Image (cartoon, rainbow, N blue to C red; front, side):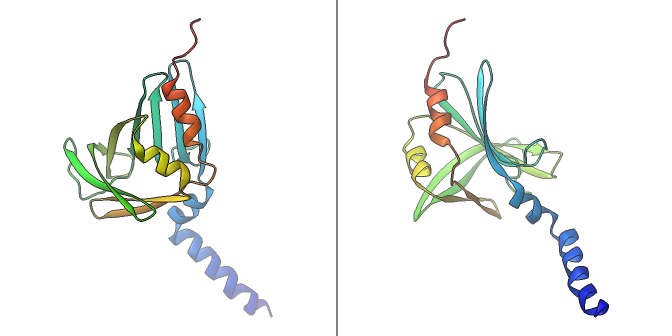
Amino acid sequence: MKRLLSIPLAAALCCAFLMPGAARAQEREWILDAADEDAFLVFGVPETDDVGVSLWCKLGSARVKLYFPEGSPDLKPDITAPYELIVGAKKHKLSGRTTANDLTGSTSVETELSADDPLWAELIKADRFTVKIGKHELTYPLVDAGIDNLLKLCREKPAEQ
């Protein structure tokens, strides 16, 4: 009986060590935070550096930056690279500035869009989106993401103090 119990336990432990990224991804959640000048909507693990995607803006700027820290290891840093963001059946061709990400060994990609870009309305209605950057493809959930709340902060001028 002990042997029968130890086989599933060993398999579970093995999988936990072989798939740490998948386990971390399951712990990720959407977190909205606003400070004096900036607002951030991050899909990551709270209290860690584990971030899948980040959206941020200067309050009242009407401009939103979309940042993928692990864009693709096959991209060169310091270039403008095309990528695809898929929402439902619609493919959006975007481009972003790449930077070397020393923490992940990958190349990050950042794009700036207007807070009124039609892409945001599609993302608000969707339950997930997929991004294809170089040879890298990831899908992110959007349920309870709060993109509309971030956009409100990005559009509204902060109150004078």
